[in-house]
Image (cartoon, rainbow, N blue to C red; front, top):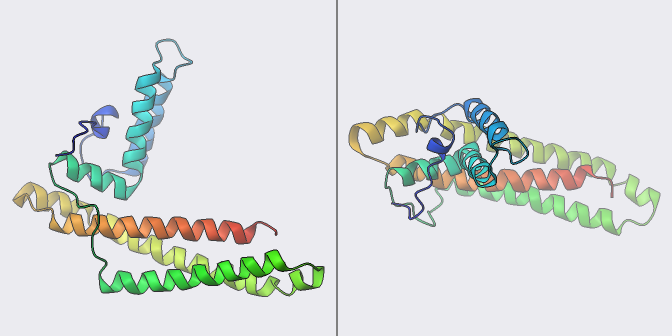
Amino acid sequence: MDADPFDAYRVLDLPGLLDIDEARVEAAWQRLSREAHPDVAGGDTDRAASINRARDLLASPASRLRHWLERHGVSVPRQSPIDGDLMTLFSEVGETLRQADDLLAKRAAATTHLSRALLAAPEMAAQQAIQSRLARLRAESEAVRDRFADHERDWNERQDARAALADLARLGFLEKWEQQCRDSLLRLLVPG
């Protein structure tokens, strides 16, 4: 079991369900944050920090899955292998991000209005490519989240966390790549 006995579900007064609605997490956080905010009567800085930490743990599907597993005493490996489908997606995302970085370097080196104008079409294409990758990453993440109820059932019926551990590794990669794509898209959208 995790050495940290912190229980995000308990802090937010939520049932310890992996397949919990994210809007329910957010509503609990908002309600408790208003009560615990240090600027209100009876507010408490430490409690407010715990409430924020709990929200952070439960807001991300990957961190929620990790927390849920650790609450059940499942040892979570630090690294997991990437399956073939995920490796293919990794290659596609990596190539899209490399192309965007190359384009950003060209934009930074462009010194005239004409040279910057000539980059407009490739920049638009790069933005569309990143948005396409983001859509795929989100769909992959959603497919994993759709299996959360199955993971709860597997645990409750057989104390089996193998599929949940595999999905945890998958979600970790997907969330990381999604953030990299969002960052790259933002850099493309900001005029150079």
